Amino acid sequence: MVVRGLSIKKYGGNERDMKGYNPFETAQTQFDNVAEVLDLDSGTRELLRKPLREYHFSIPITMDDGSKKVFQGFRVLHNDARGPGKGGIRFHPQETIDTVRALSLWMTWKTAVVDIPLGGGKGGVICDPHNLSQREQEQICRGWVRQIARSIGPVSDVPAPDVMTNSQHMIWMMDEYEAIHGAKYPGMITGKPVGSGGSLGRTEATGYGVIFTVREALKELNIRPQDTVASVQGFGNVSQYAIKLYNQYGGKVIAVSCWDQKDQKAYTYRKTEGIDLDELLGITDIFGTIDKNDAVDKGYEILDADAWIEQDVDILIPAALENQINASNVDKISSQVKIIAEGANGPTTLEADKVIQERGIYMIPDFLCNAGGVTCSYFEQVQNNMNYYWEKDEVLGKLDIKMTAAFIAVSDLAVRKKLYMRDAAYVIAIDRVAQSCKSRGWC
Ligand code: NAD
Image (cartoon, protein in one colour):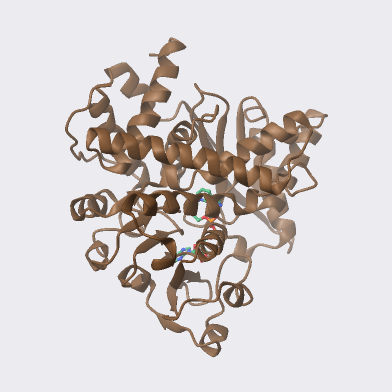
């Protein structure tokens, strides 16, 4: 393994978000930097810097009012050298093919860094479930599967939930797939409801995994969790379970932010004595939106969208969407912050990441930090294959072992080679995938 200096390069992209960032550009630049560090040959670079295949399709739906509407769907398979593709399906009004491509690359590195025998893929539909009935969402799920049924499956590419999709969407998708193929295929999708092929612990897995890595980082910094305070962006699946376990370890969260559908903007909810998780859950909808009026009644301060990043805390946990820590707000990070744990995928832009690295903040990079979900999805498939289901403690115990081992391998390399944690994680993951591609004769 050759380790050289790192640089930042720019690439042209065509799909930018509202802040002007393109996540695919970010993912490719991160890859190119590490390809340089690993001294990868040009064939391997060409192979790994873009997806192996991608599908774009239309999903025609009859809406509840009888009108017809066509939704745009995607499935991208970045790499399957180490095993079947794996990655969620996101429903989002601002979904773009470049977001899906970026997420598919990050899935490949994620499955590799935790060393599970899977590749990386991602899917999406441009839609806003807030404005769709359950029946309309079911039609989109079934329509998505009808378009892609021949190219996904338990031994080729396995979808899962992501932003604004959940176990209900997964079971509709599995049902459609099984109807098309005429047999039972519980391993064709993960994140299913418990009792219908789902695994105990899957709901908690990503958030808990985030905190397993935070716990290990705190050990390295010689800080006790009970002496720390955190601020979290997002209040959905990842965030809620991260806060739950962090609280169990004795940590205190003083601020969370979330998107407000009615006002079409995000707010930060702060209680300096520490938020009460159960109280907030009681006033939060299934999309992770906290009711603003109820929060005021319960004594929360309502602050701006970016206020979560400005708090005087020890730990920041971005757990919402991509590009949330960027050039416009990175300088607002308090000098007290010691750890950033990326619960979301791609929450930090390249410019912001450089600043964080220079400031010496301990970064737990997304594809390591939030790998608990895909690790548990892998456990779900293993249980589906055995048709034998583990108790929750067994699932979460195995998850802790996998996450901790992955964290230690990355931090050991970071110390040994004097690398930034993100670069160390990339070096391990890309090296594993490149070796696998090479041994198959792909490059
Ligand atoms: P979710 O849909 O359950 O929750 C998302 C939360 O983010 C909601 O509270 C929403 O209000 C909030 N949000 C959206 N836009 C925001 C903004 N601009 N400012 C502040 N808050 C905002 O989603 P999730 O499953 O918790 O996923 C969150 C992130 O974690 C995503 O990047 C996702 O790709 C990643 N992730 C999720 C899993 C998983 O298992 N759920 C696994 C790995 C990575």
